[in-house]
Image (cartoon, rainbow, N blue to C red; front, top):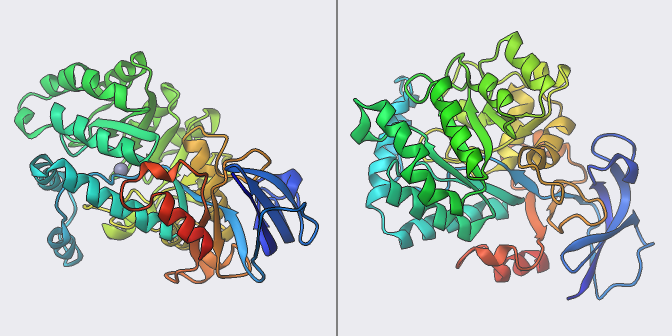
Length: 408
Ligand SMILES: [Zn+2]
């Protein structure tokens, strides 16, 4: 293993108050950071770092923890560009569109699922994302849910069993039967491959009681809880998430005062996914300002999926969150890094404190504020990754491409 010094950084975002200016981003100007054996081992002033094997001059650039994308659906067959175009022509989105992807995912060979998920992960890496959470959920039957999690597990340790994405088409008249499957045979097949269990709580998907049963069954198998909550309208999702101690309630677009209070009082992170609101032309975005004011921990994620948010770009999500959710540029960058780590209950990522995993990204810009200031411009890329971690991505995004990124 070797050590590398990233030196003469115009602005270093550490997300550690004590390492910087005392703000939540822990900013340091004219800084250096040393990475050794896949960890951050030194942070300090430019030109003052200890001797290292390798030295990189990053004059004029901003370095920050790689984005933590805590909500994605990268394993699927087919795409839905026609549905998107129709919706942009005035047709409203309903949860029914998911069934198109379920049929295509069931029909796809595993090599195809693996290849396409790997390409999407590589897209993420090229835009500065490190750790990614990946859900199943386009099988809605045992074999495809399990196959999806096998593919997800080759790409990340943050795998989520989302058998409860939408009712399986064979169970249209038997929702109780589908919940029995999701909490029984499907869970037994999928739990060994998953870290998390998730439920889409919405009219047309799963109600509060069904969600409680599914999350409880997952917990009995050792899975942490996450919830798709209050996306399309008011509902019990946030309350259920807070009640069961879920790591995160995701979407949070339609909240009442009781929901905001529950999030503030619980340890549950509110993960905003404004890419979904953008891509569905939602008249309403999640009110990030209100959540911040209430003291809720806020994360940002892409929700990358073929139906309602087909973006892999955390910089795009940051720009949207500033423009549409009322976050400041600094709050949005924190939410996309430290917030995502909190949503995954990870203490080793989302910051550049000593001992942090060496997931670093760099901006071709002098400060983090440019991410919102220059929307749609490819400023961010992964700078370095802990060796061995990206090796899980087959073909693309693997150790070769990570080191190519690092040496670019
Ligand atoms: Zn989602």
